[in-house]
Amino acid sequence: MKYLAFLSVALGAAVALAAPNNRKRAACTSANPFSGRTLHANSFYGDRVRAAAQNMSDSSLQAAALKVADVGSFLWLDTISTIPTFESYLQETSCDEIFGVVIYDLPGRDCAAKASNGELAVGQLSTYKSQYIDPIVEIVKRNPNIAIAAIIEPDSLPNLVTNSNLTTCQQSASGYRDGVAYALQQLNLPNVAMYIDAGHGGWLGWDANLQPGAQELASAYKNAGSPSSVHGIATNVAGWNAWSKNPGEFENTSDGQYDKCQDEQRYVTIFGAALQSAGMPNHAIVDTGRNAVQGLRLEWGDWCNVNGAGFGVRPTASTGTALADAFVWVKPGGESDGTSDTSATRYDSFCGKSDAYKPAPEAGQWNQAYFEMLLKNAVPQF
Image (cartoon, rainbow, N blue to C red; front, side, top):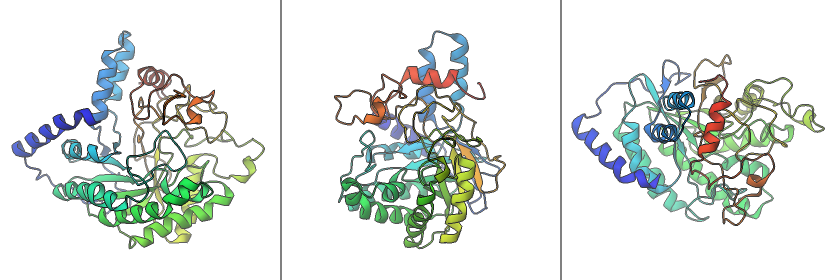
């Protein structure tokens, strides 16, 4: 993302000078902020996809790839250096769209994984607030008429529920809780709808994790002052779980009886009830970007570059479940989850498992072959 910073800032300045942002939009105050709006197809991902299409010799595959560029997806602000590009992408959004953004730069990020460790060390909470969250908030405030859906810090609070035995997560805990609360407080704006990351059905959906998970998220919500812009949770972010599958992918395994949330539809319903009891809004958005093909993983926890995956259902507010505000594409399909290079500093053993695609570059880098696989295996097809 860094190499686009100068160009994006320049384009943003040009847009600001040529056409001031005075478009009028409704604030995100309805029960479902996605109702009547389409998820914006940001040009950061679109440009990567169009570049990938140019590298294809198969004309039919190329045509399909170009359709992917028009699918709405979330923009990840995963380093401080990405923030200068944010406004120019944001201002592409039309009146009938909602812009998706992922807030993802907590100190000690991803305390239970190596592949997606962040730039801020444990203890750098003041930097997170002043150099990361505050500049993002300033940009959002300058664009009050653009509807925004913000996913708050994937993997952070779920890790505190299930990986509290790890020293890295113990050290990160206070920074996670304080950082998430600060983000929720500062982004509590009329044009923003926030969804706190809640893992997925194979994570906090286990019987033993439901209540602790709901309490952890509800505590963050309450510690932030119960901000009205929080609509609920985001699930299956960068994940592989089916929205609806009965029996679920791991339902008939020996321990399947201890997890009633065998697909994301059941998770949204069951965890949603726990959230409501804990005193937190319980609507959800679900990442369907790469979940088209099931039965690929050896274990439910296998998260890295799953081999054989395909693009899933396109973003829509028509979910058939009242608590599910929308199906969305959060993880940009084609960007790696982590490197398969065992000598790399950020190598995680999950990226070397037999159900992980290889070779794979560092997290966030483009994997052309993996993108083409997602495209060929898409359901529905492009």
